[in-house]
Image (cartoon, rainbow, N blue to C red; front, side, top):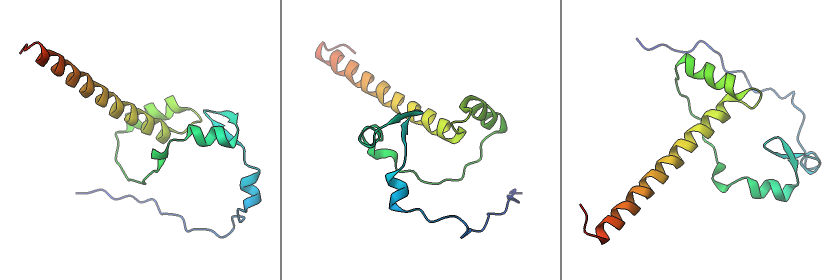
Length: 110
């Protein structure tokens, strides 16, 4: 039997103040917790940061590990960074394998 969540999604509240352009003009930009200029921030944020909301079920020990490791940073951000490193690492491995195959082919080694 499929378990369903009993958590209710909160209704959107109109109590939040409106954000104006002046608010954005006075924003503090940070990269890895360090204050930077707007241009430094823009250079540090890659174009591929578009995020998509997903719902995923993970084992409780995995969530506990990432919450503990992330501290105040946010455990979901740490999970995302970890998955990106794994993905990038797999690309490196496949690139190295391809390079080795090409070199072996030059010498007709099988």
